Length: 244
Ligand SMILES: Cc1cc2nc3c(=O)[nH]c(=O)nc-3n(C[C@H](O)[C@H](O)[C@H](O)COP(=O)(O)O)c2cc1C
Image (cartoon, rainbow, N blue to C red; front, side, top):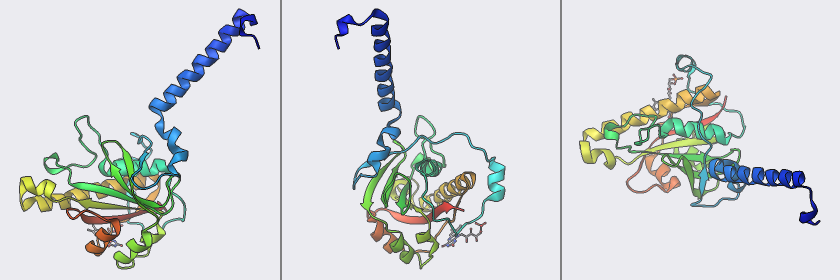
């Protein structure tokens, strides 16, 4: 086809379509990377990053309804959790909510000793693996391959609902981040903070129609070994999560 011979309106229309396509592509790449990466996420290996969808800042459940309805749930449907729900839950636990780094849960001296891990057995667009939540980037880092929920159950005195849940959170703490400022008293601050983060997860799950429970009965050393935690990190809570 000879472009020179095309009439002016057709050339103009063609130009418009071309510009439209180029602008859409640039917009997708810049502002919607999660859409572009959904397929690739199934292929990722250890130490790769997963961009999470942006969390919603409004919901249909009032805070009072969430207080009223929240219960510890230990039975879950065998259904994959969506990446959107996972993103929302992680954000509720430790998401960044202020330009200077303020988070959804308070922290003594704003020292943020908590770390959150996601153990996936069954999730949309995430393969079974262990992921570390990076609040600043709102991303996941794949740190271990495969489904470890069976081992986690054994480490938690055979509380079988752990392996029945499609995903589990493990909240850990690096105590030294807080004790270097507050000394011995920092230990209690860190425990309090784990409670704040866990309550956020309870209420967020309630608002998403999901169930969870805080599990404190487990062998610390075993959980640390399974998750390959560093020496300075201590697991504080396991939270299985699934559809009620
Ligand atoms: C520090 C702490 C540790 C807990 N550990 C466990 C646990 O190991 N296993 C379990 O099934 N529930 C555990 N729970 C959940 C409690 O059993 C539950 O909160 C309690 O029965 C009250 O029920 P509700 O949460 O539905 O109000 C724990 C709760 C807290 C606060």
